[in-house]
Length: 253
Ligand SMILES: [Zn+2]
Image (cartoon, rainbow, N blue to C red; front, side, top):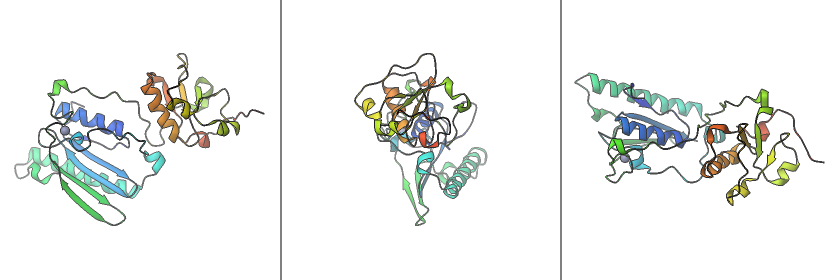
């Protein structure tokens, strides 16, 4: 990212947002932030040398599972509104850099905009830099970028399901769901077991696919196996889960 002047956050997940923020602080680049969830949109510009960063506002990613756009759905029109606001901020940042008549005062550096598409209520909050911020209060050489899983973007998966036999499937649903049908050769390992700290051995020879019924629990399972020390470069989840599976189905009789 170091060869670019401006970073734009168009991501749909917290891992990417925090990684982008920390990277922007480390490289001292402006980050044009945008986020939508259901009817709510947010935008701001984070630039640690001129104002607060994202972590000054939200120090840590939420602990609970937050639905991504594949699960919560996305209002395309709202994404368009917030995306256009971000594009305006990019233009203003370019003007502030290249045209003396403009300054960062016009930009959203240090301001946070929320927009409710249902009520058309719009708020602008002035942000303060947190002098104790875990990232932007540090020297750039001390900033360590967070390790992050390869997030699966909305509906886009790198799984090659035509060759589904090449994967090791782990079914993280509960037993009664498994009994109604499962992916052939899959291993049943309910999420409830992972919650209790029990994990299967990671298959070293084949990439693993975690799946559940709709794709929600398998996202959680990704976090659990990551915390259990699995190598996430060969683990993926199945977007849409078993409900979206079109391959063969096995069932115990
Ligand atoms: Zn900060």
